[in-house]
Every structure is written in C-alpha cells, then in structure tokens.
Length: 359
Ligand code: SAH
Image 1 (spheres, helix red, strand yellow):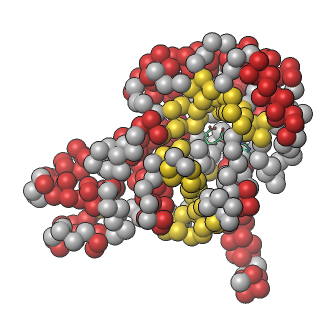
Image 2 (cartoon, protein in one colour):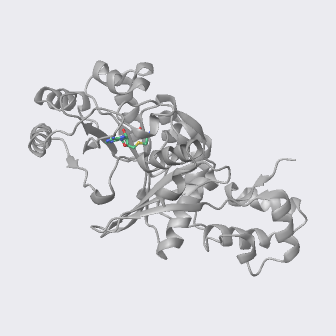
C-alpha cells in the first residue's frame, strides 16, 4: 500500500482522509493547524491528537520533515543559506534573506533541474526528481522554526524549474497562502520561470495574485538560445505575448530577470534591443550581475557597465532595479552549496580515509 503524503494534502483532502479513517471532522482542523501553523516537527508534538490517530498516521502516512544538514550564516547581513536532507537522502538548498519589510525565503522546487541554462549551477547534473508540496512547504517551515520568526515573503527561485513541477507547485502555492496555514499573502509570493509558455498560460488562468518572474537574460531569440537551451522550444515573441496575457488575467506586473554576463548580453545594443522587445509590457526589469559558477566561464560586467545598461533602459522609460546582493560573504550561485556537499560526499565514498583529515 502506498502511504498518504499527509502534509501535502490541502485542507479539504485532509478532511476526506480523516473521515475515511473513521475520525471526527474537527480532527482535520486540529491536524492541519499542527502541521501548517504550529509547524510540528513530528506527530508526537501534537498534544491534543489522540494516540490512536497518531498510530494511524505513523502506519499509513508519510509525515514529511526536512533535516537541516548545514547552514551558512552571513556575518554581513544575516542571510542564512540552508542545506536540507530529504527522506530519500537527496539534498535541497534554501535561503533566508532578512529585509526591513520582513523575512523572505527562497525555496527549491526540484532536486536538480533539466533546463540546462549555461550559467546555472543547478543545471549541471540534470534533474533528479520533483519535490512534493510538503517538501516545498517544509523548507519554509523549518526556516521559520529555526529562527523563531514569521516568514512574510517566499520566492520560488532556488534549484529547479517550478513550472516543470506544475501540479505540486499549485498545491504548494495554495497551501502556503491558505488562511489555515501560514497565510502568506499571495502578493508576497514570486514564482520564477525560464519560460514554459503553456504552463505560464495555465498559471494565468488560475488568477492567483502571485508575481511571475520570467528569466529572460537575452534580447533576441538567437542570444537566448545560446544561454538557455530551453529557448529552442519557444519563440521569444510568444514569450512576451504570454507575459502580456498573464498581466491581463491577473493584473500583476511581470518581473523580467536579466543576468548580465560580460561580453555576452551587456552591450548598449543589447539594452536598446531589450527595450524594444519589452515594448509596452507592464513589467519591471531586474538586472542580476551573473554569479560566477566554478564550472562555467561567465564573468560579471564591471559595476560601471551595469550602471550604463541600467541608465540606457531607463532612457527608454523602463523600470529597472539592480538586484541587491545578499550574503556576499557566503556567496556562490544558488545550487553551489548542494554541489559542494555532493562532491565532498562522493570523494568521501571514493577515499574514506579522507574523512578524518577533513574534520
Ligand atoms: N528555473 C527558474 C527558477 C530558478 S533560477 C528560472 O529559470 O527562473 C532563479 C533565477 O536565477 C533565474 O532567473 C536564473 O536564470 C538565475 N540564475 C541562475 N544561475 C545564475 C547565476 N549563476 N547568476 C545569476 N543568475 C542566475
């Protein structure tokens, strides 16, 4: 018998599970509160749940809890980078950023990624598997429990392509913003995608109030294909059209992410072409000087070139920000903590004698 993934069940489905197991309906409310508000780390912590129900949960359910395997803390701004271990031994990375307006958590949506963007550390070893809704929620829950503070913002910008794990993502988004859960405002949630057009279209129809961030990174079809293999299966104009559609359906302004890479996409001509491509799309451009990844050769443009690019876009009446770098002292592009951990464990498997010397 396959076990029920109880923390991935939306409220109504939990209620059905409770009734199917001969329990009173109100137990669903109690259980949901323990899992999604009080963030119980194990069934035993749920003090008003009878022992018989706890036994049922232990026997027939998976009760997902992520194990903290590592945490790097920035001495500069309090950014915390977490490595979590999943029940099957896989690792995922999440980041806490502290802002004046609240605590923001960046979560992963998959173990690895199959999109293959050339500048991204998460893409190097391909996709291992999708994360369940519970595994996405748990990244937020464990971080909130660890710091003992409320999380007000969530960005799905860690490892993985969220729209490649669409069904689970939708359940996650609904549960994260559910008033019986953490009740995070949809307006404080951002989903970043490399641009899967049919999925953006489907998401628009859901009419959620979340922000859609599109990883554009290039101003023409040809340049985008060079940086992002996934671009080969979608036309850049179609991508702009679907962004327009998303805005029409949801009223939410789109964020366009543009990683500036020296000598690749950072010239004045690129800025002009980008402004033309964007046209009248209601959006905001977020410039991200590329984060160097050991395995790739891409470099950041110097600070002046970044400012020139920004000023040019502004001349074309575009709203532009340069992403503020958080946790510079614990830096490394997303996905690198997981990679360095995987490399270390692989070398320990190959050379077990190294274990002592590395401690
Ligand atoms: N798959 C999704 C979300 C994960 S990546 C997406 O493509 O949007 C989150 C963002 O970080 C994306 O904009 C991605 O292109 C960008 N990114 C990945 N590696 C980077 C790097 N080395 N430097 C700068 N940005 C990077």
